[in-house]
Image 1 (cartoon, rainbow, N blue to C red):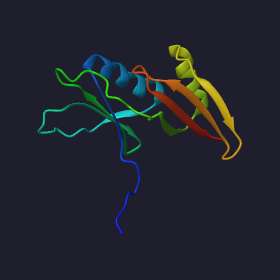
Image 2: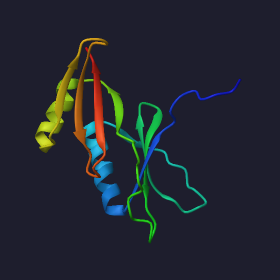
Image 3: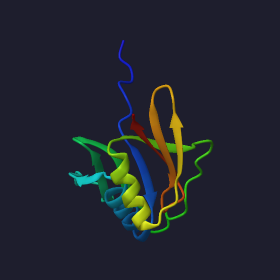
Image 4: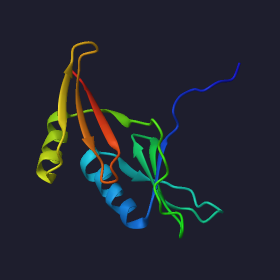
Length: 128
């Protein structure tokens, strides 16, 4: 039986100015990197951000008349598996980004909870 193998990516669609802020946030502070994005026949514009060799976050520039946020329903947050807790905290602190810390015993990890420039809640997980 064919089924889902995993989550392919998340997408954020917003006006161009917000997409630029998000691109900088996710690259400079979270640690994703900008990578290859196909040229779509539809004329869609934006960025694909990668964790390692996998595109995990797509940032799409909304077209004219398509700038209102979509209703997210009960969607709560995005979570990323991360490395180098100290360096990540240093980047967030230097940028003045507020976050909460939670330490989990099982599995042993430290979690940082913060909000991106568009208001989306983000969870960063660091194995201990």
